[in-house]
Length: 116
Image (cartoon, rainbow, N blue to C red):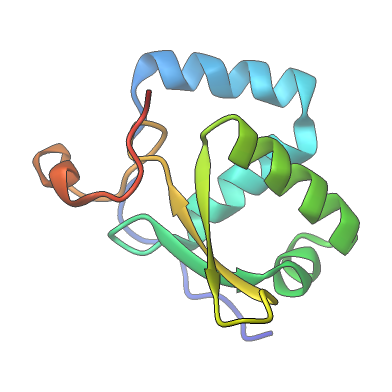
Protein backbone atom coordinates (compact mmCIF):
# COMPACT_ATOMS: atom_id res chain seq x y z
CA UNK A 1 0.00 0.00 0.00
CA UNK A 2 1.42 3.44 -0.88
CA UNK A 3 2.46 5.83 1.84
CA UNK A 4 -0.40 8.25 2.46
CA UNK A 5 0.13 11.91 1.67
CA UNK A 6 0.54 14.26 4.64
CA UNK A 7 -2.78 15.28 6.11
CA UNK A 8 -4.06 18.57 4.79
CA UNK A 9 -7.15 20.67 5.17
CA UNK A 10 -9.74 20.25 7.86
CA UNK A 11 -12.66 18.09 8.93
CA UNK A 12 -15.82 19.42 10.49
CA UNK A 13 -18.37 17.74 12.73
CA UNK A 14 -21.41 19.09 14.47
CA UNK A 15 -21.48 18.98 18.25
CA UNK A 16 -24.28 16.44 18.68
CA UNK A 17 -22.56 14.03 16.31
CA UNK A 18 -19.28 14.61 18.08
CA UNK A 19 -20.96 13.48 21.31
CA UNK A 20 -22.41 10.42 19.53
CA UNK A 21 -18.91 9.63 18.25
CA UNK A 22 -17.65 9.72 21.83
CA UNK A 23 -20.31 7.16 22.79
CA UNK A 24 -19.38 5.01 19.77
CA UNK A 25 -15.77 5.12 20.98
CA UNK A 26 -16.81 3.78 24.37
CA UNK A 27 -19.17 1.09 23.06
CA UNK A 28 -17.56 0.03 19.77
CA UNK A 29 -13.94 1.26 19.71
CA UNK A 30 -13.03 -0.51 16.45
CA UNK A 31 -15.98 1.08 14.66
CA UNK A 32 -15.01 4.51 16.02
CA UNK A 33 -11.39 4.04 14.92
CA UNK A 34 -12.54 2.92 11.47
CA UNK A 35 -14.79 5.98 11.22
CA UNK A 36 -11.82 8.22 11.98
CA UNK A 37 -9.77 6.41 9.33
CA UNK A 38 -12.53 6.79 6.73
CA UNK A 39 -12.77 10.51 7.43
CA UNK A 40 -9.02 10.86 6.95
CA UNK A 41 -9.19 8.97 3.64
CA UNK A 42 -12.34 10.68 2.33
CA UNK A 43 -12.28 12.93 -0.68
CA UNK A 44 -13.89 16.37 -0.63
CA UNK A 45 -17.29 14.78 -1.34
CA UNK A 46 -17.07 12.36 1.62
CA UNK A 47 -16.35 9.21 -0.41
CA UNK A 48 -13.76 6.49 0.17
CA UNK A 49 -13.21 3.57 -2.23
CA UNK A 50 -11.43 0.67 -0.54
CA UNK A 51 -11.53 -3.04 0.07
CA UNK A 52 -11.81 -4.55 3.53
CA UNK A 53 -8.35 -6.03 2.95
CA UNK A 54 -6.84 -2.61 2.27
CA UNK A 55 -8.52 -1.06 5.32
CA UNK A 56 -7.42 -3.99 7.51
CA UNK A 57 -3.82 -3.60 6.33
CA UNK A 58 -3.88 0.16 6.81
CA UNK A 59 -5.23 -0.15 10.35
CA UNK A 60 -3.23 -3.23 11.33
CA UNK A 61 -6.28 -5.34 12.19
CA UNK A 62 -8.04 -8.37 10.72
CA UNK A 63 -10.45 -8.27 7.81
CA UNK A 64 -13.19 -9.66 10.08
CA UNK A 65 -12.65 -6.73 12.49
CA UNK A 66 -13.14 -4.31 9.59
CA UNK A 67 -16.26 -6.16 8.43
CA UNK A 68 -17.82 -6.06 11.91
CA UNK A 69 -16.90 -2.41 12.46
CA UNK A 70 -18.25 -1.45 9.04
CA UNK A 71 -21.53 -3.20 9.81
CA UNK A 72 -21.81 -1.15 13.02
CA UNK A 73 -21.17 2.05 11.05
CA UNK A 74 -23.67 1.10 8.35
CA UNK A 75 -26.39 0.13 10.83
CA UNK A 76 -25.83 3.36 12.77
CA UNK A 77 -26.12 5.47 9.61
CA UNK A 78 -22.54 6.70 9.97
CA UNK A 79 -21.79 5.54 6.41
CA UNK A 80 -23.59 4.23 3.37
CA UNK A 81 -21.97 1.28 1.61
CA UNK A 82 -22.09 1.26 -2.19
CA UNK A 83 -20.89 -1.90 -3.95
CA UNK A 84 -18.51 -1.44 -6.88
CA UNK A 85 -18.75 -4.16 -9.52
CA UNK A 86 -20.40 -7.53 -9.21
CA UNK A 87 -17.99 -9.22 -6.82
CA UNK A 88 -18.29 -6.70 -3.98
CA UNK A 89 -14.61 -6.91 -3.04
CA UNK A 90 -14.26 -3.14 -3.26
CA UNK A 91 -16.87 -0.74 -1.95
CA UNK A 92 -17.36 2.99 -1.90
CA UNK A 93 -18.15 4.32 1.54
CA UNK A 94 -20.18 7.52 1.62
CA UNK A 95 -19.72 9.25 4.96
CA UNK A 96 -22.92 10.66 6.37
CA UNK A 97 -22.73 14.41 5.77
CA UNK A 98 -24.07 15.09 9.27
CA UNK A 99 -21.22 13.10 10.82
CA UNK A 100 -18.21 14.76 9.21
CA UNK A 101 -17.48 16.78 6.12
CA UNK A 102 -14.46 18.20 4.41
CA UNK A 103 -15.92 21.07 2.44
CA UNK A 104 -17.98 24.13 3.17
CA UNK A 105 -21.29 23.36 4.86
CA UNK A 106 -23.23 25.11 2.08
CA UNK A 107 -22.13 22.39 -0.37
CA UNK A 108 -23.87 19.62 1.58
CA UNK A 109 -26.90 19.59 -0.68
CA UNK A 110 -24.74 17.50 -3.04
CA UNK A 111 -23.94 14.85 -0.43
CA UNK A 112 -25.29 11.33 -0.93
CA UNK A 113 -26.00 10.45 2.70
CA UNK A 114 -27.96 12.70 5.01
CA UNK A 115 -28.53 12.28 8.72
CA UNK A 116 -31.91 11.24 10.00
